[in-house]
Length: 187
Image (cartoon, rainbow, N blue to C red; front, side, top):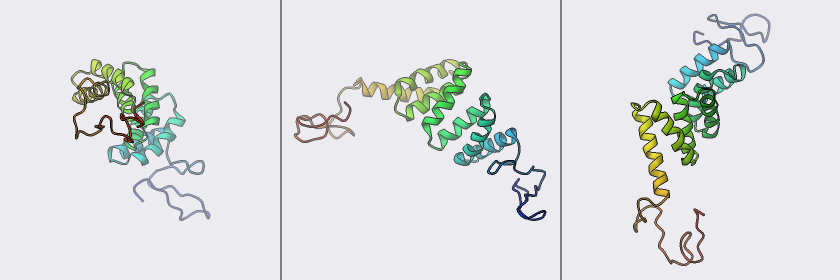
């Protein structure tokens, strides 16, 4: 096999025979290769649109090299793309705390916080990212979106008009939110 997979044929029964120059697996369940191979294959899987598969390899690489910012950043990207926003936030935060001038880690921390509904934290880290790289359109767009969400939640755009998503008819008994006897979901 030329894709780096191993075969179970040849040799003693159950013995792994490496093909294509890929070393046999060490411990049970450990991917073939070394930490750099795991990182490289994980990054390739991420680039090909397979974040969950990339995450599996990158978790192994991060366990072996916990202080590697490049591995943690790639892992955070894979986790974010796979929808694991809380773990992505933790890894982006670790990278940003190790190097506060890492604009991409600040950006990742900000967008992960936004996905988790923490728009105050999101605005803080997105603003840092924009300050470091003002030419990055996607940084500025994410910051605008977060600030718009904060402004809308604060009522900066005025009350919602009837028919708008989230509008609650005032004074309607039994209505969830806003009315007498209703439960305000935002409280």
